[in-house]
Image 1 (cartoon, rainbow, N blue to C red):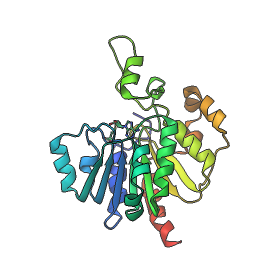
Image 2: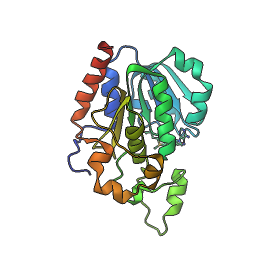
Image 3: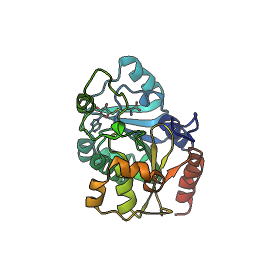
Image 4: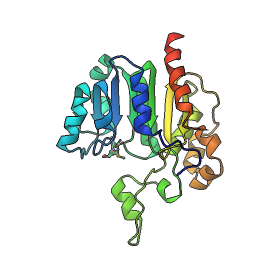
Amino acid sequence: MLADALPGVNRIRAVQQALAMRRDPVYLEIGVSKGQAFQRISADIKLAVDPAFRIPPRSRELAAAKGRVTRYFETTSDAFFENETALLEQHRIDVALIDGLHTYEQVVRDVENTVRYLKDDGVIFLHDCNPPFELAGRRADSWEEFMAQQSGPLKIGIWNGDVWKAIVQLRSTRPDLLVGVLKCDQGVGFVRKGTPESTLPYTPRQIEALTYADLKADRKRLLNLKSPRYLGEFLRESVGSSRNT
Ligand SMILES: C[S@@+](CC[C@H](N)C(=O)[O-])C[C@H]1O[C@@H](n2cnc3c(N)ncnc32)[C@H](O)[C@@H]1O
């Protein structure tokens, strides 16, 4: 458990709170697995992307009951953005949850592709941005590969990968995006269009070379780490931002 985590805030509540402020919203979830989050989310249009859905029929029913239109795309996020441009141009995104492949290069691509179709006041959340210990932050290309990396009978069931580096990269390369992490639920990243309060100076090579020890020594600055209480302010400002444009 991280020091000042509020028990009430997690990725699902953050998404629900953001959607509750909007009329007939469009929701996109990248990386859905069993639908633990997707089945709980209410939105007008719900788009689910995963190359290997594990969502049981009952969860599909629950998910469908909470939306007017629910669509499943059994493909990678890269292929989804390449093939579904017409759909995305017609239905721009209000709220997205990015929780697919846990490598930072993929997460940066997922954020940048989502931003292309995000409404001006839309918001993106990302799961797994603040690994609590070194093993959880290990790099792997899949859950199976992460589990195979662990020898011995006791295996750790938390895998965040190096998603945290996506936050560092976005804060270093995108002065048009406000990016940070809520200190709860293994790190809930947040992104919206707008001027960031602070940026980072890292080059791609420096980001590649960063280690878990660097993160541990400097979490607050690298991640723009915020108390979960910041969620309310972030969402109020995102709605305010569209009124000002
Ligand atoms: C941690 S699970 C998602 C959990 C879900 N968002 C939730 O909150 O219950 C990660 C999922 O990402 C999917 N995934 C892996 N590679 C992907 C890719 N390239 N594009 C989209 N999803 C991917 C995996 O199949 C897996 O189901």
